[in-house]
Image (cartoon, rainbow, N blue to C red; front, side, top):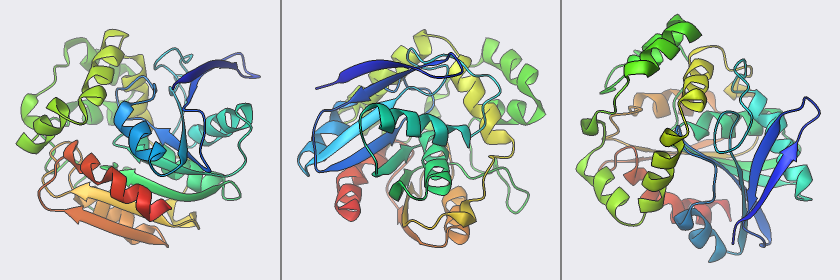
Length: 270
C-alpha cells in the first residue's frame, strides 16, 4: 500500500509524501540520488514482515516535490518533521540509502527528541580535506563540478552520462533481482529532470549545516568494500565522527548490493 499525500508547507512548497499504512514502529526512508521518493517494494516488504510502517517523501526537486535550489542537507530535518506531523507520527527511525544517508543523519542530529536510531547505506561523508574525497569514485565529475558551484554543476548536467562501470557485478545482479524497483524508480526520476540531482550534489559539496558528531542516537553505517560510487573511506570517516556508531563493511558488496543487508539492518533497528 502507498498512501500518497501532497503536503503544502508554510513557505508555499509542496512535499509529496508516502505512507505504507501500519506498523508498531515507524521508519522514514530517505531515498538516493536520483529517486522519486515513492515507496519501493523491497523496502516496504521487509519492513512489513517486522511490523514496521514506512514513510517516505521526495526531496525538493524530486517526485512531485517543489524544488528548493538553496537547500542544504540540514533542511531535510524540517521537511521530515512536516511529513511525520502530517501522518500523526511523533517518534521514528530513519534509514537513508546513498544520497539519502546524509539526510537521514541530518534528522538524527537536528530532531534528537524524535529520531531514535539511524541507518545509512553507502552514504557520502561531508566535504573534507582529511581524506581524498574523490578517491575510488568512477565518476566524480558531478561532485567536482558541485564544489565549484551551482552553475558549474548545472552545466555538467547538460552532458552527464552514467558510467555503467560505477556498479559492480553484484550491484547489477541486485538491480536485476530483488532491487529492480530501485532501478526503475531511478529511471523515472531521471526522466523527470536533473533538478533534484543537481541540488543534492550542491548540498553534499558544501557545509551540511550540522555536525555529525552531535548525533546522540545510535547509528548503523553499512557500506560495501567494492563501492565505486561512494568509496568505503567515506564510511570509515563517518564512523570516526559519530559517537554511537556501529559499522558494517561488507567485502563483497558495491553501491547497490549493500542493500542486501537491509533486512538485517531492520533487525538491528528493532
